[in-house]
Length: 344
Ligand SMILES: Cc1cc2nc3c(=O)[nH]c(=O)nc-3n(C[C@H](O)[C@H](O)[C@H](O)COP(=O)(O)O)c2cc1C
Image (cartoon, rainbow, N blue to C red; front, side):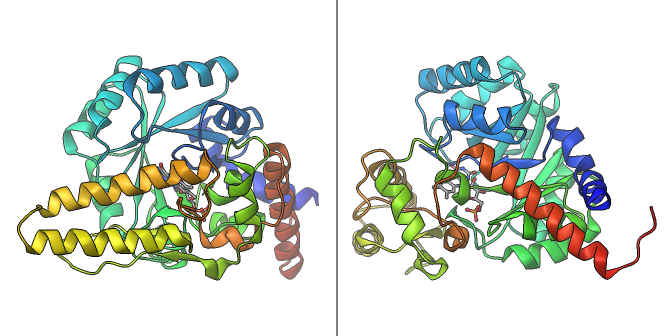
């Protein structure tokens, strides 16, 4: 076990130093869910919490950052969605504060936003859903990547986590790379670390934690769901591009399909532009997620969840989740070491 712990320590080293934490395990930002309590608890337990900016009104956003800072003296990040209407206000605020860790989501961030962050002491992490975007982001000067695969919950990219990992991890030494999507335990974590990852990011498992503010109905729906129940949405007309969203199938997903088809029809009649249609589709998700997370309407609300939902079988505290990730990682290191003869 000593050797396994040493191996895990070695694999955690770059991510730990970059994030300034004990365990480079990120609690990925989840709109409505990743608020002060969950984020500060993850950081206080040695992981790295990430506050979801979502489309919060600016005053609420400022308050939430202050509240989280009051609840932990450990590092945490702020997630900004570049397609959210309040993005610029959020960005200006974190730039003013020189907030230490900024995570850009929602596609390739605008170049001026990247350049502005580079003029501060803040570290910037960006999502890379494809190998091409990973390369562009590194060229643009980001400090770290989060490669997020198709298995993840919420808005997703086109490529699976395993393929992204194989394409990116062994070839990227310039910046730390964190892996997200489909990770349910320390078992997979250790293998991505061995392939070169600096850490991992989980969303779905933390959504069901004791400290998550999600409604009990929402958590129970996750506990009951199998991996096959968390499906991505379809796009019916390329003129109205839809970023696929992975969620547990329910009436809300049917409502999304009806809305999409209705918007396409309106567009064909010239009553709507593609951009307006896209905005309405995104608004659907923000409202739908609130309905499920806050109001507990798991029939019509959105149950965004990754395929790892099939691995989540109980409500655990953040402390238990993080320690279970580490323990399972050590166990798997032990098994790996027993297969090969490593000298001290
Ligand atoms: C309910 C839910 C909401 C999410 N909201 C956001 C978000 O606002 N911003 C973001 O960058 N990622 C969001 N994500 C993605 C997570 O941060 C994380 O990368 C993803 O859940 C990892 O995959 P996993 O669900 O398989 O653990 C969300 C995921 C879920 C499940």
